[in-house]
Length: 253
Image (tube, rainbow, N blue to C red; front, side, top):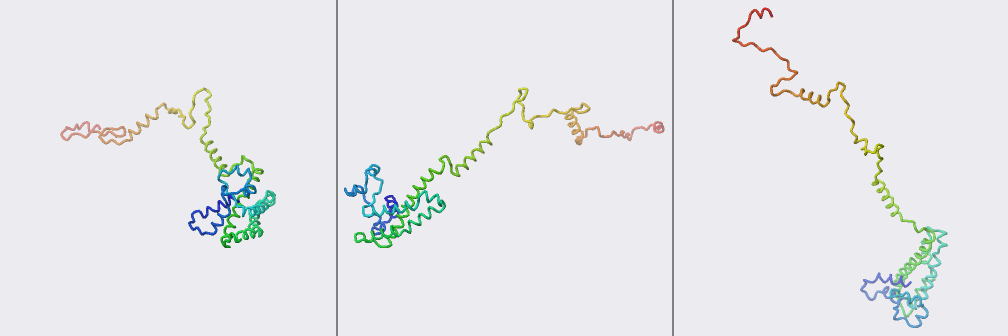
């Protein structure tokens, strides 16, 4: 309960209005250790609590201490491991509903806040009641759920995100790992089949294919400088106009 009051006061930390009744009501529910008298130390502040407290625990005032004990008793009975076994899905919601609609603790809280020594307004009483009771419920229910989790859940179970990350890392590692190369039977490092060059097949007639292809390419190139090629047909030279014609040879031919 002390933590619930301290946490609820954070809501009004930045509120500069000193007359805020909700803030004043929360402040009246706690005391400092230095302000505790002998009666309070004997009834509400045991030795174990004093040894644990190093200045961070919030002490509930004696005026609201008994009401806090009754409220915690209702909260403890509303959410137990037995109730979790009966209905695990809605046990939290059902337990919270039982506490928030408990008329006994609600009426006791109102009577304390409306006493002549306190005299707070109904709106402030209802606001504070809703805030601190919800925090008390959540803090207690969390303890019960943690105990149930330790008993029924294995410690080595990981979250969904951790499982997904582990699976991705495993796939990456398997892709990066190279398969060991199989040694050649003769002890020679043999390259992969795709990189192995095939020996050149000899031409049936014993002619070098590369040389033949180059010559064929050279012969197919047109002659642009007037040089003779093997494909050009030789023509007989025309006689000179001034040369004498041998009639006998013409007749014979």
